[in-house]
Length: 152
Ligand SMILES: Nc1ncnc2c1ncn2[C@@H]1O[C@H](COP(=O)(O)OP(=O)(O)O)[C@@H](O)[C@H]1O
Ligand SMILES: [Mg+2]
Image 1 (spheres, rainbow, N blue to C red):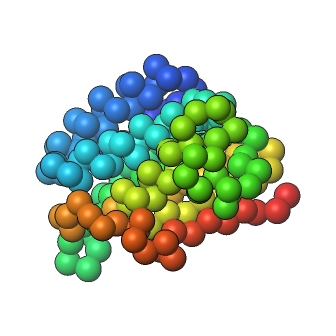
Image 2 (image 1 turned 90 degrees about the vertical axis):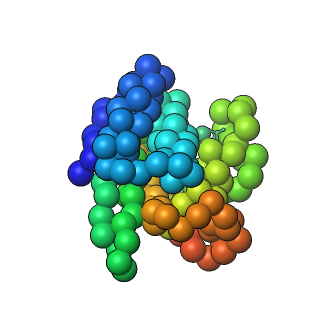
């Protein structure tokens, strides 16, 4: 594991980003991979602080078919996402903001899985294979994204 940071507010997201930047650099992750993963951390961390009340974000590096991938896991104990399919759509927001966080995470990653349980919280797992280039990611292959809501 590269990093685990507890998140309860926006200040924690700033700490997360500086620590994640350092951890990725130490692991030899740079360029478009590092920028993409830091953006994913920012979006998921921000969503925890804003919607999830408190939780944590974990970064792991693991081998994959001759290369490596980064796993970003964000989990919180907030209210959960009422409609995961809707939350994945561009410009859907219950917070009067842009609604591009989760769709952006999908575009920057190879796999995305969201598990949300009403009243118990949300778990988002996103992975990105390193060294595969900037584009296209899963925006072009929507079936790679998985959205799941666990009934209470
Ligand atoms: N961790 C979370 N807990 C509860 N709801 C969430 C969480 N993350 C996202 N959501 C819901 O999904 C919606 C879309 O999220 P996102 O795409 O990041 O857009 P935005 O943050 O601009 O609202 C949010 O408006 C919110 O309703
Ligand atoms: Mg957001």
